[in-house]
Image (tube, rainbow, N blue to C red; front, side, top):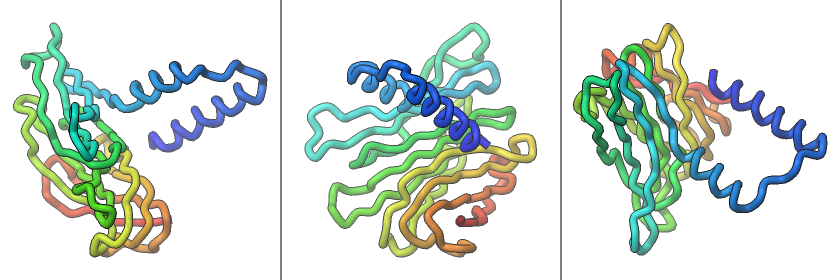
Length: 200
């Protein structure tokens, strides 16, 4: 799973710091954060990127979540983009592209209210039209706590999509009720079967 790759990278980063590697400048850290906000994948010869865009002049601040298809010699479709949602808190982003299609996930705060809790939206995006084939929402029961992050991974050669992250409360029908969750979507790209939850 990607989470394990991330863990390896974090360990490597810590080791470098321990060995006396120079700390990044504030400017480099800002650039790294911006780069981390862009999640990219390729399918059917087309490259897709998920990003968050701060809405200029918006008060209170809000971010649009946009999926973009790049034009290239290997892509049968022109460049294009579509806004998948809006958040009143900086979103956590994830994109996964495989032989089936494109999946995106992002956390979002639906309103600026202090009582508004962060949730996650998981989408199946059509590579040709950029339209949403399927949209699913993950959130703590009754909107009583935050769901902070939603990363993506796959099993069964990509047929099964896995969303995972951290949360503060119980998800509907979950097994467990701990701070980390896994939502498994069997046949995500070819069905509307709801996810099976596990927490640890």
